[in-house]
Length: 60
Image (cartoon, rainbow, N blue to C red; front, side, top):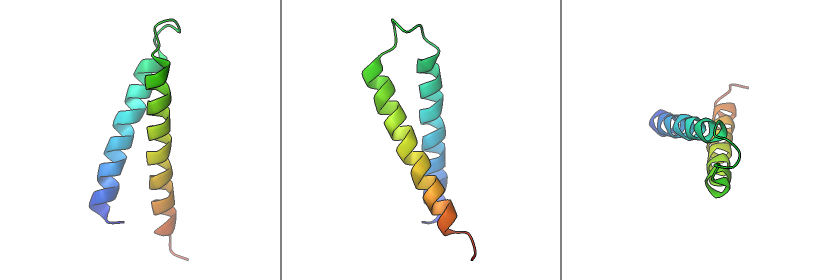
């Protein structure tokens, strides 16, 4: 992947994980669990994309 795409995915991932942390600090009765699961899934997927692409760029 190009550097620009990786930068966009990284920024997207940071924003998602900030949203997850803001949702997680709410009391458990007020947490929107559907939103939390969606954010966790999107954050995990974006992090996985970043990790895979960074490992592919390592010299052998």
